[in-house]
Image (cartoon, rainbow, N blue to C red; front, side, top):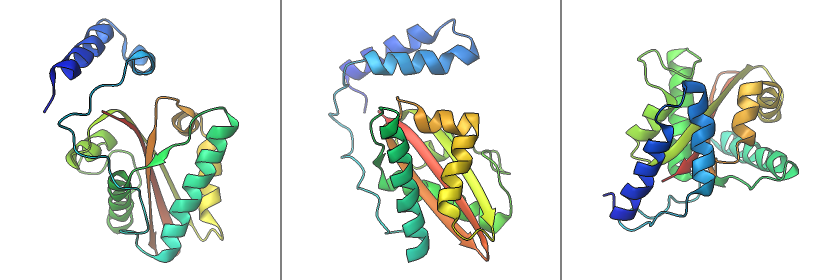
Length: 191
């Protein structure tokens, strides 16, 4: 349930975004989020539990998820940014999408049925201000986790997600099918 002070904050965001071009919406939203005072958490579910190996496909994939998280945070700290906190519920959404890509043999931010990262996060009842997604797949790589992070850092859009200061939480899901690994990293700023 949205309380009075939350409506004020949401109204301010909506009013500030009116008239923005699509390319300006993201940067304007980030600017507003940084300036906006904390919104009361009354009526909101308690914060999601810290992501653990619970729900991971295997010990190996859980280790890969932890390694990706550590490397992403090391990069963010080198850039003077805050670390991303693990969100267990977000990690579960990421794992489910990695599993789905593996089992349905596709690789895309928008699934064959048309759902986007934002729709998958909303469908899990995770409230957010802003959400992003990084994907990676690799076959026969001896050490796919560092390869995933390097690939994202070499890609302007994925790098932008990793270095976006408005993101505060992440969930990472790795799924293995044969010699192929699917990585999904969701990044968000919760409501």
